Length: 501
Image 1 (cartoon, helix red, strand yellow):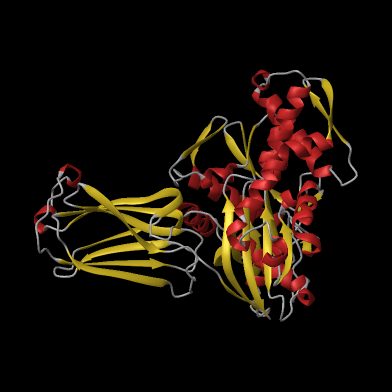
Image 2 (tube, rainbow, N blue to C red; image 1 turned 45 degrees about the vertical axis):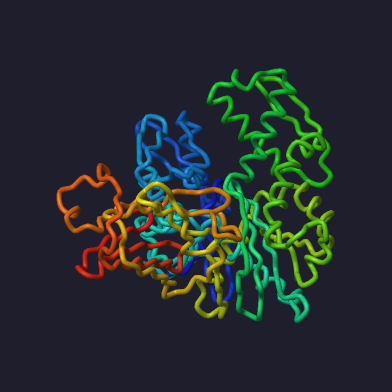
């Protein structure tokens, strides 16, 4: 079995292999035999059939309908595996789309890549990644799609945590007794994540995470597109879908070619050449970069005093394809000084770190944390009010055997209405803060008479006094996925709810 690190990205998916202490990035071959160090995260429809990756780009060149950045659908609060996605004339569930893409990736690894493996060995075990602030449904669907596509998943790690492995593997001398922590700044195609990692030899302890689920390279491309159409005197609504897609690709390519010496960006808008000053473009996207710095504030305290905040920081490590924009390291160096390091392989840093984690002989160990809180809104006063009960706080250490929390009490109502949610955090008085995402709404009949043939959503909550003994058991596994069990201890009646199912 071949061991891999697989970074399923919004715009590009990268794979690194485990090869006797080395972690080469896998190259994929297109129809012309040209090598690409990534597998494009795209799908296209042509003739009623779906194509993925490099084959999707080729299908689009033949007139197919191309869908980019479909991974962003996973970040939506209403995300579910059954969500329908239209790709041209094909209507498919989000889960089927993910499995189709990852299945095509697996076939490409076997048939159209430079991956070195033993003859006849088509089995892969993989360590995979998710954004640090991915919600439960996103984590579940990612994990299950990889498994359904034929990968044996060894572990699922937060993206910046994996990049922390690549940093200490590449720059171990920057870590000392006085400077033991690494701040990973990961700006990808669709998301921004940051993790503060304490490094002790080969042991990594993630002490905090922060992130933005809707800020990434795609947003920088969109700003350049808007700037270009404005300079051309064209209303964006005038662009046909195919014209807009072509212009967006121009913007992406032009952005990725920018260097610190670049002065102008030249684009073609509806047959008209438009020249944009790079300084004007950078001014337009500076608020996006500033939003990532603000998102890191909980990790470093007051950013107005960066010298103090960085006193024990070995390095601020820039990874992800979005960090290649010259504006990003420039602004961060202005803010944090010379301890800013950019990975020599920013787009592949996470994949390399995942491969290190997949290497049983590397000796690296990781203690990751839950990045989102989990709790429940409960009825009180016979349904006339609600109270929030935080179950798992953000930054709970994840363990291979899972972390379990229980609640035991005697029911005081005929019916329990549990509104389980994930949240960005919990304030000092135990109330949820930040964005709230629904996990599930569960109706649990405390009264045994309500357990057969009764539509519980039609039942009014009533206070009954001493009811059955109830146990709530909550488990968060090593992947950050939560399972809820509610049990009537007296009778054994129970319900189990798992994220995404």
